[in-house]
Amino acid sequence: MNGSLFKKPIIGWALYDWANSAFATTVMVVFFPVFFKQYWSTDVSAQESTFWLGMTNGGSSLVLALMAPFLGALGDRGGSRVRFLLLFTVIGVLATAALSAVGQGQWPWAACLFALASIGFWGGIIFYDSLIIDVAPRERIDAVSGAGYAFGYLGGGLLLVINVWMTLDPAFFGLADASAAVKASFVTVAVWWMLFSIPTFAFVRERTPADQVGSTLISARLVKESFSELMRTFREVRRYRAAWLFLLAYWLYIDGVNTIQKMSVDYGMSIGLETSSLIQAILMVQFIGFPAALFFGWLGQRISPIVGIFICIAVYTLVTIYATLLTTSTEFFIMAGAIGCVQGGIQALSRSYYGRLIPPDRAGEFYGFYNMMGKFAAVLGPLLMGTTALVTGSSRIAILSIVILFAAGAALLRFSARGAAVSEPVPAHAGGR
Image (cartoon, rainbow, N blue to C red):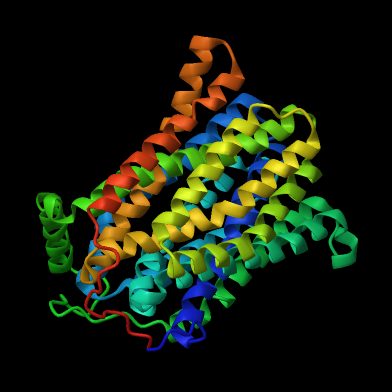
């Protein structure tokens, strides 16, 4: 396979990000949290609604975090990562579409379906991330990873524009009101997710492992051997020192990234921005993220993924400091623009750099650990901010404390880079079929 990005396996793989990002933007970020509070849980207090929304998010995240490494090992041993990706996609699509049938006040059903859809979304990402090893030649892995995130930002942003338009002018789409438009949006997300996933399942082929166990999706022997493989990985930590150090670094700095993302919306509300303005900021991040992710993919390929990650960490550190000084809506949009410039870059280069550190024949398992750390990366930031606020009595100093996560992550990343021979060639493993 040559260096071109315009190959069916690469395009098919990248289109999955275009497909499932519709769920991330329209459902997870924008409509579900608002609709849950203002429509499905109108018969309970605001505090109880917030509690159950948090439990829904936390519960689904915990389930996936704990299962991720085992699911990855299961996919590796059975040579069935594509099939598992299809399974989780179907789960996510059906649960998302079913949200449109949940009536007002039926918040338990909404919470259960959202949790199921989230499991489909995050579970699929375990296998999607690991398949980059199968479609991308080593010398193009950074560019391919960047292209995936770029497609995701563009696809998710385009459908969000349509869905927001539907809620602002429901009559134009033949809908009764904004509530009907939101419900219809859940259906459009499901259709979009499934439709644009078809090229992934048509064009992406994974390597068949030499020691493949069985031909069915799950069997007793496959489960047993996958668990044994997982235990062997824990016993062989020293063999993959650079990968484990990177995972620790990733856990720290991506926790900072996640905290900043959540803090941005809170800050927007605190300075009096309307919901429409916040949605505009989210859209701005999406469309800035498209070219930015492509740029950082190019940077990682031409110079070094480590250099790109360090640049992103530096920008996030400056954004954190800048956030403590925000006073106007214009400054908020400047901050959102800065985040859009590096958000896709740090995600894309982290994924591709990690792919250089792991054994290709165990990509699913190792990307399971990667996604596990990503799911747990929403703990330290809020805890650090809360503790700092309690001790200092200042929310601005509390926000500034997030810089500690970026500094610690950068330090560990440096150690990981020293232990990894990233520039050395490895045996070819990318198919490009």
